[in-house]
Length: 225
Ligand SMILES: NC(=O)c1ccc[n+]([C@@H]2O[C@H](COP(=O)([O-])OP(=O)(O)OC[C@H]3O[C@@H](n4cnc5c(N)ncnc54)[C@H](OP(=O)(O)O)[C@@H]3O)[C@@H](O)[C@H]2O)c1
Image 1 (cartoon, rainbow, N blue to C red):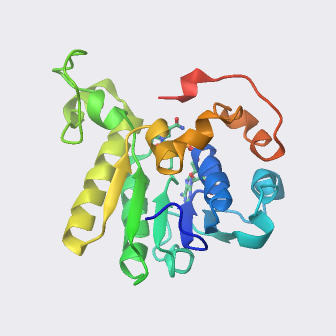
Image 2: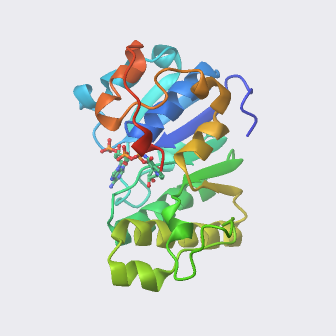
C-alpha cells in the first residue's frame, strides 16, 4: 500500500483502541479516507478523540462491527485497499482466532483489497525454551505454544494462534498479509519519522484523549513492548 497515496480508502478495526487511534490520526493526515470499526459507534465519550482529529469530519467514518459476528466487517472492509486489523479481545483465545478469521473472510470478499496489516506481538516470537538474548529472532521465529500454556500466558497464546491462523488463511486465499510484532513497527508503516517528532508519541491508553488536542503528556516507555 503506497502510504503517500491520496484519497485511498483503508479500514482500521478496533479504531478507538490505543494503537488504532494513532493509526487513524496518521492515515487521516496522509490523506486517506478511513473507515474505523468499533463495537459501539454511539459511545460518544470513547470516540470523541477520533472526531477531533484533523480531517476526521471530512474523511473518517465510524461503523459498528464485532469480531464475534460472522460477516460483521463486510461493509466496513468492502472497497478498502488496505486493512489494519488491530481489534483484539485481550487474552481470550477462541475469539482472537475466530475474530481474525472473520475479518480475513471479509477481506477475501473485497475485490479492492491490496494488503492486510495484522498487529501481532513480540510475545509471538520470544517466549521459548531456547531463548538466548544473543541470538536474533526474526520472522521465522515462533514462541513455544507448550511454554505459553504451561506458564498460562494467555495473551501470547491468543496472539500466536490468531497469527498462525491468519498466515494459513491468507496463504490459501492469496491475500497479501504483513504482520507487525511491535508497536514501533506499526508506527513505522505509517511514517514513523513523523511519530518520532511528535511529543504525543508515547501517550498511554488513559491519555489517548490527548491525541487529538495536542496537549503534551509524559513518556510511557512501558507501552513500547
Ligand atoms: N499496545 C501495544 O503496545 C501493543 C504491542 C504489541 C501488540 N499490540 C497489538 O496491537 C493491537 C492493538 O493493541 P492496543 O493496545 O491498541 O489495544 P486496545 O487499546 O485494547 O484496543 C483494542 C480494541 O479492540 C476492540 N475490540 C475488543 N474486542 C472486540 C470485539 N469482540 N469485536 C470488535 N472489536 C473488539 C476494542 O474496540 P471497541 O471496544 O471500541 O469496539 C478495542 O478498542 C492488539 O492486537 C495488540 O495485541 C499492541
